[in-house]
Length: 230
Image (tube, rainbow, N blue to C red; front, side, top):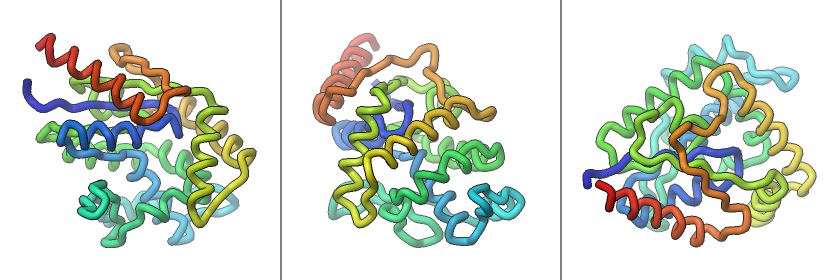
C-alpha cells in the first residue's frame, strides 16, 4: 500500500500532537503540527504588538503573513520535527499560556487560515505524513486516507495540559488552564471559518483514560486493518 495521509482532529489537549508524533515515528512518516503553525503566527503578532485590549489588529497582521517563514526542521537529538519562525526555533515559546490564550483569535481569521492551509497542503504533496489540528480531515485534506477524531472531556484535557505546564518555566493553575480550554473549545467550534467538527468519515477514538502508548496501539490497529483491506 502506498504511503498515507493521516489526519488527526480534535479539541485542544486531546493528545493530537503526541499521537501524531508517535505515529510518524512508528510509520517513518513526517509529522506536521498544524496547531504549532497557528501558534507561531500568534507569537509573531504578540511580539510585534499587534494586540490591543485583547483583540488582534487584523489590518496589521494580514499584510505580514506572506513575509513569515514558517517551517519544520528535524531535531536529530530528540527525533522531533520542531517549528521555526523566521529562522528561530520557537517550539518552546509557542507553548506559553499567553500564546494559548490568543491562538484561537488568530486561527479564526480567514486570511490566516487560507495562508496556513496552503502551506499545509504543500507539505503533504508527497504523502507519508501525519497532520493534526482542528480542520485537517474536513478542510485541509478532505480526501485523507485515514481520519481520526480524538475525544476526551474538558476536565481530562485540562489536567493533562496543567501537568505539562508544571514541567515548564511557565506553569499555570488548573483553573486557569480549564478556563483557557473551555474558551478555546467555544471559539474553535463556533467560528465561521472551518469550525472544528468531526468529518463524516472520521473514526472517533476516545482516549480520556488512555496513555499515549495505548492510544498509539489503538490507532496502529486501525491502520493495520486499513492496509489489510487494500
